[in-house]
Every structure is written in structure tokens, then in C-alpha cells.
Amino acid sequence: MWYEKAMRARILPLVVIVSSAMLACPKSKEAGRAKVDPGPVPKAVQGSLQHRPVIDTHVHIAPTEITRAVGIFDEVGISWGLNLSGLWPGGPLEEQLAAAKASGRLLVACNLPWFVAKKTKDFPTIAVHMLEDAKKLGARALKVEKGLGLHHKNPEGKLMAVDDPWLDPIWEAAGRLHLPVVIHTGDPKAFWLPVDENNERLEELTAHPGWSYFDDKEVPSFEQLLEQHINLVKKHPNTTFVSVHFGNNSEDPFWVADKLEKYPNMYVDIAARVPEIGRHDPQKVKDLFIKYRKRILFGTDLGIGQEQFIMLGSFGEEPNKREEVSPFFKAYFAWLEATGDQPSPTPIQGRWTIHNLGLPEDVLDDIYVNNALTLFGPAPEKPISSP
Ligand SMILES: [Zn+2]
Image (cartoon, rainbow, N blue to C red; front, side):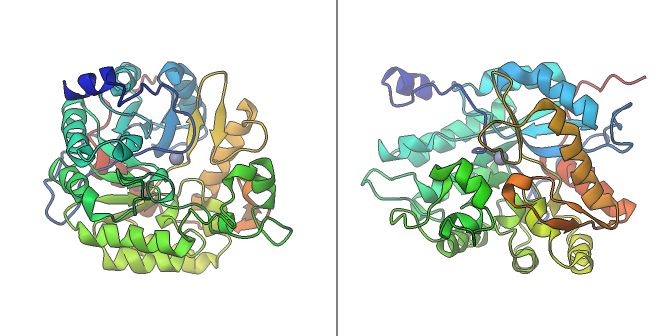
């Protein structure tokens, strides 16, 4: 295949590890998309934290770590997950798909090798071929990492905008192939601000100084990136976009609601942004979640990599510990289901109180299960073994 030649020519170095937050893809929606049979609703995982079925649409699992992932799914009650770190054909999407299939608990999104864009003018064509191959192999979405917009360059050596028209064939192909585009643009707003005691992510930025963009002249502003992101969604109405981390603007959930209203091809997940969304007026957030219940997906940004690596939305100087996993999921579930207040589930991102939403059962069903089945279904084939 073309990419094998490209790899021999060293255009495509083989990238093997996929642990932290940088990949994705989804599919389908009401306007102009063929409906896919979502298949049966999964069962609740017996003996877990949850008595309902839950699908986690935002996980990053290395192909060698599937057994650990399934152990976590069983403990916390995840029926199945969407692995946003599938990479591309030959790189090793096939390995990810095979591991996912054997587990019966994961679907896989492919990614694209954006670093190739600076090496050849043919990148959009190459990417479209990759998407076609990925679809044939069984990928259920395309995940686009935040590097698009922040770092990746074109053959002229210029930073590519998220909505760069040169890349339009990729988004059109994703729409045609019914591969939803799960896309991360930018980062938390605080990463653009001075790293001092006024920065609400001081603890996280102190642990990871390289995550700050303050004074980085190479990187567009938070607002510019959001504008590019929304323009992309607007320009491709026949392509479904899952704008991760609550529309990539969790600091302002009501801005996100306005975009959901305007663009029916836009969906959002809540991954790694419960602290930001949860600090707003709970009644207003609850109303928003009820109104857009068909467009909001459950996701956590659980990352599982080699050498016992665990990430729960973010991490400090050390990766998360195994015993932190259940409390983290419990807090996510409680935020959606319970009433009252609780501490933020990701203290490294800011230590404030969040207000639980107490969503109705039928809304929980949409957010936990139905929307994921609509976009990425059908569910993995192997049924969960349950008593
Ligand atoms: Zn992620």
C-alpha cells in the first residue's frame, strides 16, 4: 500500500506509544448522514461501581495494555470505550483494532500523521487514502489531536490553521465515510495566562512547565484557535464533529450551548473538564444538559500506557495511581447523577467545589449510552461476560 512505500522512504516513522491526550475521530449525525444501526444497548457491568451501562467515548489505551484497561472497566462499570489513540494504517492501527476486537470492550478511532504535512504537498490526498483504509479496517472515528492549530506546519513551513482550506478534503472524506471527527483544539484558557498565583491551573502548570503558552509567540491565542475550530464545524455541515473537552471551551459552557444551537453537526464530550463545567450555576448547567442531551457524550480522558502509566484527565509530576481510578469515576458519575456539592475530581486542575447536576434517568441514558451508540455504534461484538 502507498503508506508502506512512504514508510520505507522514511516519510512515516513508526510511532508506537500512545499514552496521553493527543488523538481522535467520530461519525454520523442527523443532517445528510446515513444512519448506522447502533446495535443493542450494552449491559451494566455486574459488580462494578455503576448499576447502569456506561460508554466512555474518550480513552487512550496502548495496544499492549488492554487487559489493564478491561480490569478498570470492570471495576468502575464501563461497558465499553472508544480508544482515541488508534493511530493510522501501518502505524499501528491494525494492532489496536485486533487488540480491541479480542477484548470485546473497545472501539477504535484512527489518527493522522500530521507531521507528514510539512514534508509533502500530497498530505491531504495521503490522509484521505488513510481514512478510506482505516474505515475498511474497522476504525469508527477520526481523532484529531490539539497539535493541529498549535504546532503542525505545511510544506512552506507555516503553522496550519485548524480551518486551513488545504485540509478540506480530509473533513469532506470523513463526512463521506461516516467517520465522526473527534477533535481537540487548543487547551485550557489558563495555559495562555501568566503562571503565577492568579492562574487557576498553577499546580498543573508547575508540574508541567512546558504546557504553558504564555508569551509563546508561535502559538495562536486561545480565542483565535476557538474561532478556527468553530469555522471548521461551520464549513463542513455534512461532517460530524465531536468537539472534545466540552467544546474546547469548558470555561464558558453557555458559549458552547450557543454553538450547539447553531451547528447541528457539533457534539461535545465532558472529558477532563468536569471541574470547569461543574463550578457554574448547577441549575443553568442542568438545563443546558437537558436541552442538548442528544449532543453530549460521556468521556473521561482515561489514559493507560506502558510501565503502569495511568492518566485520569490530567496528572501531576507523577502519573495517577491505580487506587485513584475508582474515586475519579465515582466523582464523574456523582456529578451527573447526584445533587449537592463535591470536591473537583481532578484537583491538579484546580481545587474548587463542583455542583452536582442530578440529571433525570432518561437524560443519563442519552449521555452515558445512546449518543455514543448513535455516533460510533454498533457496540463491540463480543458480549461482556456477566453472570
Ligand atoms: Zn484525550
